[in-house]
Length: 436
Image (cartoon, rainbow, N blue to C red; front, side):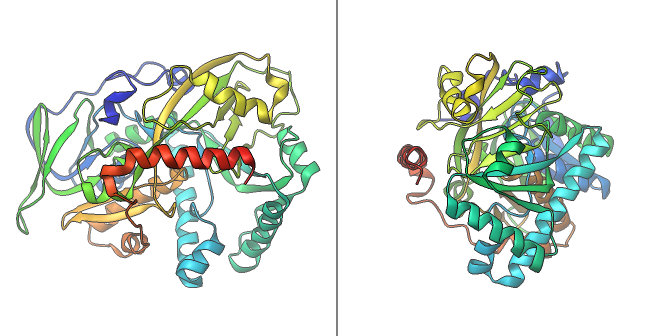
């Protein structure tokens, strides 16, 4: 089963609102014949393009190999939320890793946001401020308030505003939740536009990007000083360093990483423009994510289309009717939209880890990998690219700090990921429906 080909037409973007908004993109030529580079980057999403940009800016020759199109994967399909910190909150980090490590990881998360905003500005892609977190229970609201106080007191971050039921309802236009918070230091963006923008920046800096260049095998360097060989169907690339930036589309390129990083699917719909109707919905154009395990997340775009993600399925094949999967979740939040048309519906594959922290690793002495962002990847993937570029240049301390976070293999490793997905998504979907 190859997720690069299972659900999508080869060489084409999914039928997403984002692809329509960005318009047709001229294809980049595939790798053909023999080629040489200082660094081979596999995957043209946020991680790979950020790495390519930073490496090219440092004067290294960089070749990016993308199996499909730039931004074809999660980087061009996601909810566009630029969240603060790490996927796990700082109290979890303090408990499992200690206060000093938690602070280091928080600071890296803040750097990730700043980097993403900077790259978006350079690429001419607007970023809107604010993400609300919508809680389903009183204990979750109490925890949100505690974390806002904790971040302000111990981390110097005073941008999180606790919200009671009425304040959250005013902020999002829904009575489905009991409270939450609003992080004014977070933001949201059109994700495919951002990916394409960073690709342009990387190319302008000198990186070569090849689409339609699926990597079929990697022969890692047999000894120090020798290059690795990266094979595609039409060409071979030899490089001194290899960066794996494949996330949920890694396939069989590295079984050790695949055992720790599990692909899962998620689905998004977009409504017709709401115009001046429903002024209660997101009046300040913030984004929202709730506290379900299979999270609901949404925002308004510049045409006041509601872009809403949610819903789980227990197979890797996308459902025939994605609208039917997502619509009940949308209406559970906004029942007033029951007669509003959905104009777009698409699926995508992201990747999670056992502890929801990203998996940074060295699969071989001259190979680096970062993946498994667990739904928190817009900013962290951009930072991962920068950290891998630093490591290639011999400054590996910050990459190693992320790699030191333990990421255990899933039970059964890569071989049992598919049946584990079936059982896991069924269980967590049931928990969400029961409100557990």
